[in-house]
Image 1 (tube, helix red, strand yellow):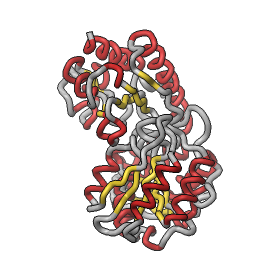
Image 2 (tube, helix red, strand yellow; image 1 turned 120 degrees about the vertical axis):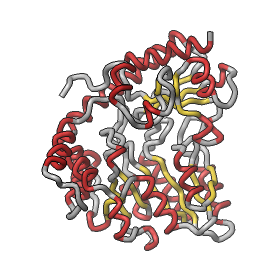
Image 3 (cartoon, helix red, strand yellow; image 1 turned 45 degrees about the horizontal axis):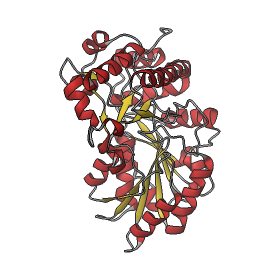
Image 4 (cartoon, helix red, strand yellow; image 1 turned 135 degrees about the vertical axis):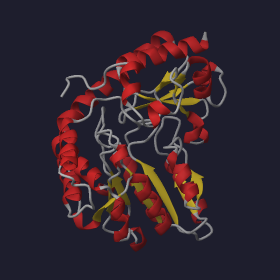
Length: 380
């Protein structure tokens, strides 16, 4: 394994990548948008997948090893004792979220989120025929109890079953929700009879503080959690996640066994290798992302002090406040057009994302530096 995982420049990665990150935009656009890493792969995962392919082990999955590997990782890393009898594979986190929403809410009913939040939440809620109710984060990027209480009350006023989709840690801000904050959320949800569905896909990448699984807090046992290796080990294309149902979750929050069929056998093999043998790789890439957090802060302070940047406590995402630049609601569109650098569009994460951009830090220092150069050029 290379001692440096986030390395190279555009000429390194563009020829090696055929997927969405490097393929959507023209060749002269530098992509720091979608949550994929520009990283050398985890060797144990490569070896496990290669071995499976060589022996032709490409059929349907069997057994509980994938769920057991997830539970062992959760126990070792977060002291979370996962009841494997209440856990099962699912195709990916968002497919799991969508199917849970179909179960715990009514058609056309409300789903509460706290913007700015993962932009796919909006698309999947729409796809399931539900409607979004927003309980925005505070200006400091924290869960807002008053906004949650108000949104849950409004959502439940008509008697419709309601869910809250929690992003823990928060994408795009990198906020690491504290145990106290999550317990407050659980109490408010219980009072309004709202089911919490926790997307905890970014949980393995933490820089400051400690990740708290939602199901481990007082009251969290009424919720559901979804975890995966897809973000932390850069395995999104292999399609496998785990859904864990809390001990006191409503019966409708238990997915039918058929949903487990969507998790790829190769994806499960990769996930097992990541959780059991990929921890050294994760530690290395997390340290390099940490260094990129600091690098971006320094570059912005020196060259673009008008951009406000709260260094993320978790994830490999940076949330930049560009409102002082006067570029309108979607500065990412301006940077693509004038600077040929692609960030994620702030408004796609909710109304509170207007004037912001999301930057992917899981890339090389050279690419990150060039991205800042291009933003400076776009503003010249």
